[in-house]
Length: 346
Image (cartoon, rainbow, N blue to C red):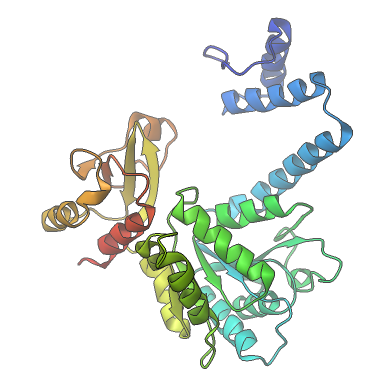
């Protein structure tokens, strides 16, 4: 390592140096700080006498995530939509047909789909998108075969032991989310996704709740949220704006695509939130954003900026135009509204 060792160490100077020597011998001179800390964690767990079950969990987690990163790595530049829904929906059901149409429409729009690899809605979405535009992240369940994943090319399916690794992969690799009617698992995904977006632990992303024509599944869901959560003040009213309910395939795809029309990504740098954009905002729009979204700014204004030193060091889309401001962290749903406003403006 070319700089000082991280603060997080084994506590044994000779062992710390041995880790550095091992990384250098392996030719791992990139991201050396993170690799040093990972190796340190392994040695500290061994020295702290963790029991066999603890070590099995850590070992399986690391192996699963390593393989998932390898599978998705070559496709990071391609937008992907996670599609959730019931494994029990049979072919011919309106929701099954809608999922297949959605998969096909997403593939035509240049997106790929990620499903749980099981039957029902998952298989339908992959059938619609086609094997070359699909990924499966499956998990071992005694009552649900991973039927859809078998049709995918080699290297496009990841099998998980732990739900938390699977959920992390869904969230990390997806640029948008589509949920069709389903059971406990689908509702679990819906609530966890909304929780992560609401708390800012997931990057702002478009969410579509899709119900076939004549079905009120998600409208009933929204009614519950309004009456039992929003009206008593258990969630903010604007939190319900983080998703769109539709029965139209074209609208669903438009919701996903339009979220990235001008907005590209974001990153926190030096106490400020930096929004990276595909094209710069004109002066009139910048003035409008400052007037309309002043509640999101802790101090100062929303302003243009160039890539920070940290972004430049990471080669993090440094050529894109940017906006930055000191973000009021409790207003995450309003941040979604700001992004939509940036995208909608001419």
